[in-house]
Length: 170
Ligand SMILES: [Cu+2]
Image 1 (cartoon, rainbow, N blue to C red):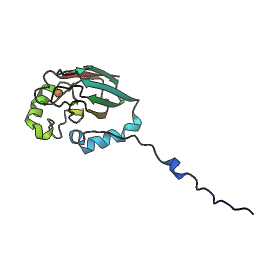
Image 2 (image 1 turned 90 degrees about the horizontal axis):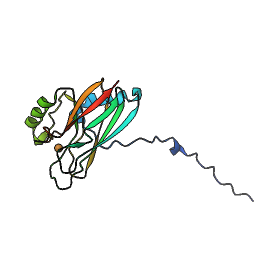
Image 3 (image 1 turned 60 degrees about the vertical axis):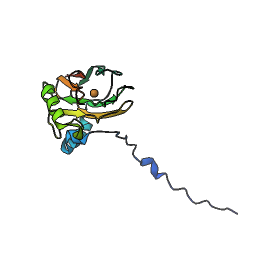
Image 4 (image 1 turned 45 degrees about the vertical axis):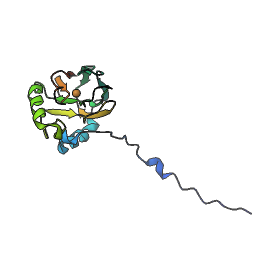
């Protein structure tokens, strides 16, 4: 007497893709078209690079305040608000060279309701959302042409001090 067990179905779940979860990006800053362009070119990236940066405790500063990557790298910046007592939010906004002063003025004009980010501002290369104390957010972008790219926090009153430079090498 042989009771035949039914054939086990082959594990079809094995083919399931293991997608990385994108935590937070800012489509508002890049614009939907810009964001799609970033992802469309992802396969062409030289290398995937993850850069960690945080606010400097209770101070209006980034640590580190210098970051480095290579042109064409697919860069993921993970920014953490490391403050505990400071109530203000922070963000991390990467800008085209030489545009930081004008951008800060524009971000103040945009105001709190826009998250201190002028909508559709073409000076922005990448930006995280605003973070409260203890929170983290990320931004992803393709590293632009070699050069020095300023980054700032655009929260009202922070941009003058809270800034640094991304050094993009060839
Ligand atoms: Cu800030």
